[in-house]
Length: 315
Image 1 (cartoon, rainbow, N blue to C red):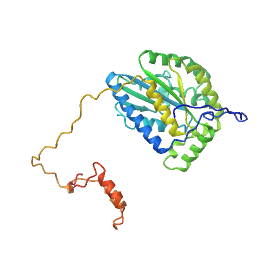
Image 2: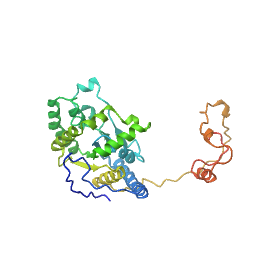
Image 3: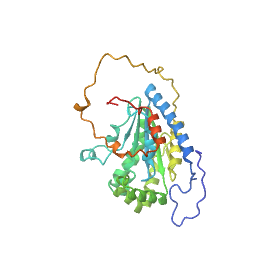
Image 4: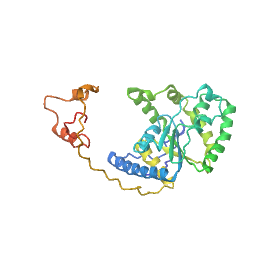
């Protein structure tokens, strides 16, 4: 499932879009959810190893807009402690930051011992959007291309595990995802003016990416490409590769966790509910009080841990 199969694309009249030469496999939901569960369990082992050994991990997520970076990051961090793994998604630099050495504001977010940092966009903004949109001068771009490999070499030589992923999506799939965002009020915030520019400047971004790869795809900090026309396929492939690339091991838990028995009451009495300001019970207004609610659904709710019926007003 994890191997890409390349196919020959003979239609060059419109160029070759990113991802079109990669195999797209439709992953059934049951297969995807089962495999994702196993991979997330392995990420839990990675977390214990990072914390126990003091390892430092930096994962860079770059690629086209709407290529699935955010969804993959969400699946990686879903069951990992935010004290171990944190996401860095920096806004536009302030006036003060614009006067600093370009890499300076990113250095402040590098991991300490026992930490994983996931950069949702990174210092590679300079080689991509800043170059295409002319937010940086040609001289600044040249300086970045010269300094970036040296900067990353210093990180690796200092012991940081640096992984760089480029998410590739075809122009047709990108457009469909933008259209879906436009029609979905829950995701409209993801559609920015820069996203619209990425449609009309597709080939400009392609040329910028190609130049960036020439200068920054090094032996000590290589780029790993993720074909992401299929989001499920991309998530499984990327997470599996990340786990395979790190020298973690399944460390034993420090000690078996045993839940203590609740102690007997010492006579404590809770204050009256009337003196506490509870939030309004909006959820109960959604329930059909006519008695026609699905009994199976009621049983399912009662069986969920922590939702057992109780006369305790604080439950």
